Length: 187
Image (cartoon, rainbow, N blue to C red; front, side):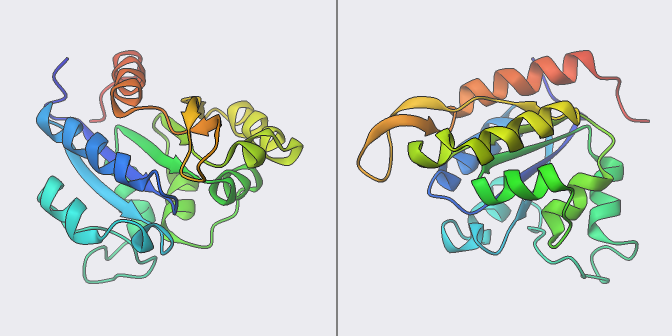
């Protein structure tokens, strides 16, 4: 499926799986999508903004207040032009913010402005993933209309086997294509 003419926001929260977000971004660009990466401050500790700028050919958005780049506010302008927002990886912290409607950084604020499909690909340690609070947050964001690309089971960065491994970029890409096929194009 070609994604020519589609605008995708790739939100990256702070976790070791952020390296997979770079691979996902590359796939989106190769399929013709216009991609803007939004990195949280924690994400920038795992993968540098230069990686995403090189992959997208666009500046990386990370500051809530950047009037030169976004006079109306990055959260408003990016949400208005997005055909889809995907958050990969979505940490336990991000899931909690999304479930509660918190807006304390560019990514969480953008999420509240988004009127397009939003996909969330959780990634965390299996003990975290299995906690009642995390599962409650997942149910809440699904009830709020966001779609979850479920984590897989396998080797985790904590050197354990378990569920919590972020879905592979190809799996997330398939979910993106399905969501875009069902969503009208932005005018």
